[in-house]
Image (tube, rainbow, N blue to C red; front, side, top):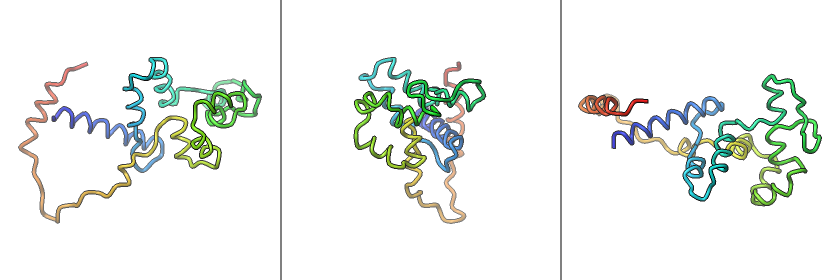
Length: 166
């Protein structure tokens, strides 16, 4: 039980760190991506592509140019002036057939109708702000009332010592 709680706490901290990197006040939600990676309906190739996109590893020419590489940032498929990931996902006419067969029509209409930055991030990486960040916080104890967990500290240290090392 303690191992599970420690692992969940570690994941939560990583979600907060990812949220800070994405300029959010809260944490990013990896739940959808985690369930897709655990799905037996996805091939190894699909799972690898999902990991690549989640980590923003799918560079288009515009991304490479933005990060300092000397490449032509225009779209190699349609010849458009820029080729950011959003162009490939929503705008490029050369992948329209594949787009329509992959993305549900209602989602595609949302993406084409002035999406928010949050919707763009979710579409490109599969990540979005964790819904629990908007939930009500638990009640706080009145001033002066403290629940001590000092008795638990030796057990936590023992559990940490018992974890396998890399």
